[in-house]
Amino acid sequence: MSDTAGRPRPTVSALFFTYLRIGLIGFGGVNAWARRVLVEERGWVTEQEYAEVLGLGQVLPGPNALNVAIQLGERFRGGLGALAASVGLFGGPMLVLVGLAILHDAYGEVPLVKAVLAGTAAAAAGMILGTAARITQNLKPAWPILAVGIAALVAGAVLRLPLPWIVLGLAPLGILAAWWSGRARA
Image 1 (cartoon, rainbow, N blue to C red):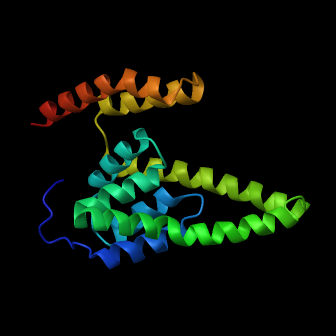
Image 2: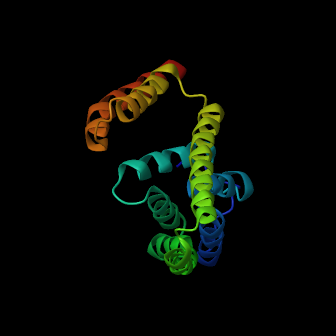
């Protein structure tokens, strides 16, 4: 993590309530909303730090939003912070989802309900693409790093390769690209 002097260090309760808010408001796009809250509003992490934690969270097993919450909670307040961020992220939405599941069971075949769900899925996809574009624009990655990212996109979206193959195949290239880019800046 880069220099944190002058940046706020959240309390356990701040982690819980911030992630509760992220979880309740970020349906379909938790990472987009989390980036906005954690980087822009709270200033707990920089754009670069969020991108690094999100990148690691995406290659670890499990939901990437949870992986990010655990990493940042632990970074700021240890195991208790990781627990608070995790419970905050999933506790509120879990209650809402149980209620929605009960309603969907009763009304899921209604055409209007189907249309709402299809529209929500499209909005979520747009949020994911928007977050990726914003992170890329703000970070301005060097061309070798960008090339590895594009190769991962092609491998997953076009070639439909399994994620473990993409990670194992491109991780060495990503490390080399980051090393080379760091040397070029120095």
